[in-house]
Image 1 (cartoon, rainbow, N blue to C red):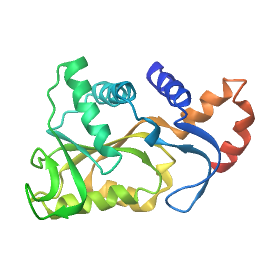
Image 2: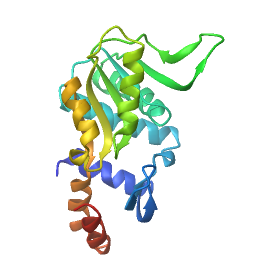
Image 3: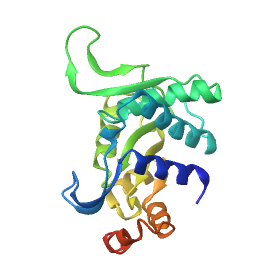
Length: 209
């Protein structure tokens, strides 16, 4: 496991973002761990979080025209990431995010920030079923003249997306890459190395067969 992954997992444990127990996910599935991104709730937290996303973008050598945050959790993620890209890597990235509801007054519309560009990265917290990713791709395409505009999807945690047929079909169709700061396998490997966490291992491995 590389240093970025290990440091990110440690950060999530310190902030109690990564929690162990019995949880029901948005998809209705049961899980023995939970990623509670709402606990990234201070300026210092978001500064660190943005750095992890920005570092991953630079490590992967991703070239893009803009970054897009998926409402709601993707909004602070995308803003903190573009700030980190500028501060740490001298990359002045454009960004945009969506509203959940269309606004009919003021600036109007469903998108806030830079105008939609081709070749951009979608940012979100976690991929489980991939339904929110598919929904936002459809929404973006309905407001764009181009049909192949998403080049990459970047999340903090990938929860076994390889087994998701719906998103894999969309991935093949749109030809985008799915990138994550950590994968469920990284959490399992981290737990194996920590005596104080080893008692969680059996349930998590069983949960992710």
